[in-house]
Length: 137
Image (cartoon, rainbow, N blue to C red; front, side, top):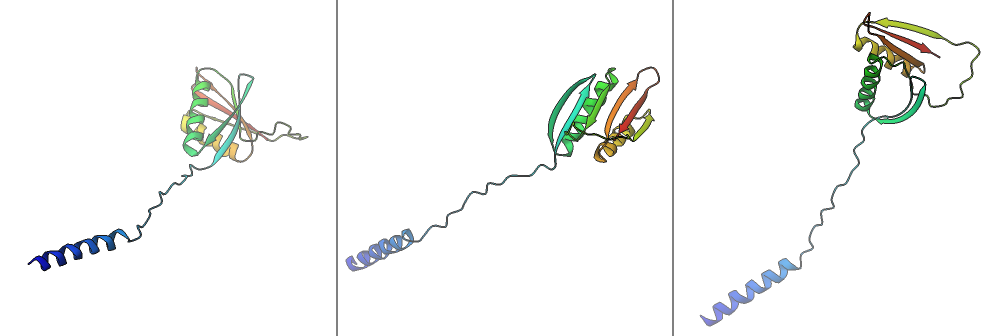
């Protein structure tokens, strides 16, 4: 019986030694950068004071535009442009005007014209409830 215990003990020690010599598979942590979408550099003017803001993603662009429309509703005149190059020279300017009572329609039209390269100036008439949007290129 003494030989059996020695054999079992030896077998157990060898088994543990064999397992401990196995190379462990290392798991590398996956660090990734999630892209949030398009980056916009927006130039905007509120009652003649010009600002520049960088926006990341469509959600930020939409939130920015809602803030600008809220300023227009408070009586401010707002101009928005994605083109930050202020040195634009053109002999003839293309002007497009749009009026609506719908804030959603105004926002959609502003986005469309800004994406087409226009500088869009908009205001809100509190008495009539009309958004007046003027795009200039």
